[in-house]
Length: 270
Length: 202
Image 1 (cartoon, rainbow over the protein chains, first blue to last red):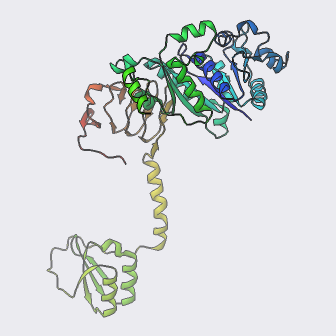
Image 2 (image 1 turned 120 degrees about the vertical axis):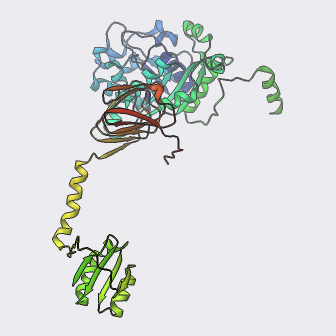
Image 3 (image 1 turned 60 degrees about the vertical axis):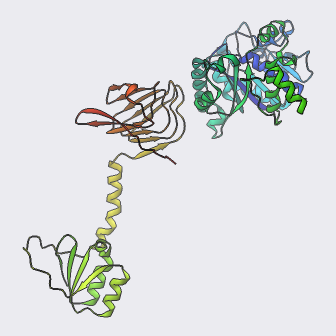
């Protein structure tokens, strides 16, 4: 049985879908079978970020309704043979989701894949509740600003009360990703520090991602930034994917990146 | 056996029957641990070693100065039945008193904690979370959400972002400056005193 991971944030626009795409691809590049599912029914975006928008034929709602088989609806990524994608329906809305059908879908997927990554919709409505319902773990994406953190806090609260695992007496493991860290603003104290965020949310950190203008371009082109080894954000995503695959990767200080000179000296001594 | 509470700290006893004396002290010696016992009558080695054993302080056959016979209380051996009732009575009292709840999970945004009684919260209240307490309240971590307290007192950390209401009166965050502040209701007036002493919660 594979692991079902929900990517949640509460607030919209913090980078859930980008994170899902990059982590999914990162896990696939680590030689693990991975499927990413877009749960944002009615507002699907993940297909574009993965560069698969012209290949969507069937969507997950059709799979859940039994119109097509999972195999027909799954799309293989061009970037890695280990990565598959299941699109959300763009014409339906979130009211089509039903617990029984979702359970069947994610259970079927977890039989074939090591990692099933669910991209949750923004907000805390039924669409969100259905996404987290059968998740084993959750990745919480926040930006270092107060509204994002409060919304994430609320989303975690709902996760801790409504997920099936909690109802059965278990616990959903939660990991925190702090996205869009602006090193200059952190250094000048304008941005919330990671310590404050961890204090407030009190869940373990799995990675920090610096702000990177390349992400917009990467999304527009449908090539996740993780493929760009020169990008700080891409390398940060790669580290997170490795950690999710069980590797020990040391945390790098993205808030105060060493400048080129110091880096060179350090490299000389290695 | 004659017994008499001579003064607050002195208890007089006259022995007529050794067995009766020992039964009486077996049941009641706890009360006399901080008393001086004045033993009159025939005090044999058996009784002396018994009193020493129990760690009681005593003097023997001393004529205490006679005062006014104001309160001659006679101690009676507590009947066995009464002793059995005691723990039950205590339980009832504890129920009537507000039971203390200790909670160490954090109160997240959107979560509401309603407590009938006293609360000791060992974690933070996040922005958007709320705690409503009938009794007294102590919170050891920072508060960023709402607090409603209707007890005699509450103790809070300096919390600039909190919304604190004590007996339906909003408490200005500026009054809560120190690491720990005590907010009390005294004679219908709210009094806020900083607790400056270092408090270690561990």
